[in-house]
Amino acid sequence: MYLKRLELVGFKSFADRTELEFVPGVTAVVGPNGSGKSNVSDSIRWVLGEQSAKSLRGAKMEDIIFAGSDSRKPVNFAEVTLTLDNTDRSLDVEYSEVSVTRRVYRSGDSEYYINKRACRLKDIMELFMDTGLGKEAYSIIGQGKIEEILSTKSEDRRGIFEEAAGIVKYKTRKREAEKK
Ligand code: ATP
Ligand code: MG
Image 1: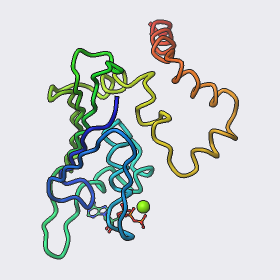
Image 2 (image 1 turned 45 degrees about the vertical axis):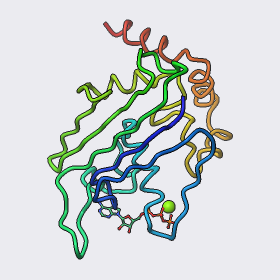
Image 3 (image 1 turned 90 degrees about the vertical axis):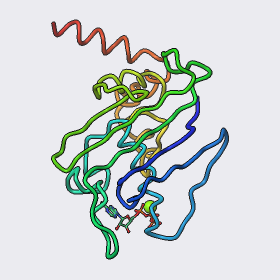
Image 4 (image 1 turned 60 degrees about the vertical axis):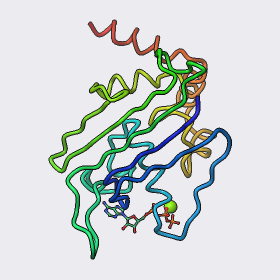
């Protein structure tokens, strides 16, 4: 599984539809200060379900919608689509390409899609569970994360290994069953 494409529409500084294509291997994003590099990584965490505006460096979720500039009017919604190559079936679905989309309006309403079909955030979280992807998983190592991995409590560290071992799904189901 690898990241194939990222499409941004009205997300932070990306007012116009912007498409980034990735190939297997290492990609580096370079550019001057304030050019939008961190906005790209924010968009990946957001589409994977990040709910905290603060961790996306804003005060409220609306702050991720393009707010306008001297020459451009603000837009009404932000949308991000992340497309993954799934020819190795790392994701437990029949498709060799899987896209997840999230859209948010100024009203705060969020919509989620898997391969263009409307779904719940829960479906997206389940799709990525135990794959290392997902908003809290180890495929995104932000500033300070390494330190966190090294210094957190043993239960938190254990969570990282459980995700890698692929058993989070079962633990979650067990917990849900116990609640009923
Ligand atoms: P650095 O090298 O300093 O880390 P960077 O390339 O990571 O910079 P970002 O933090 O990704 O830069 O981008 C910051 C820019 O995004 C700022 O110019 C800010 O005004 C713009 N920006 C953030 N949110 C919005 C928004 N909602 N609407 C319009 N522009 C936005
Ligand atoms: Mg940055």
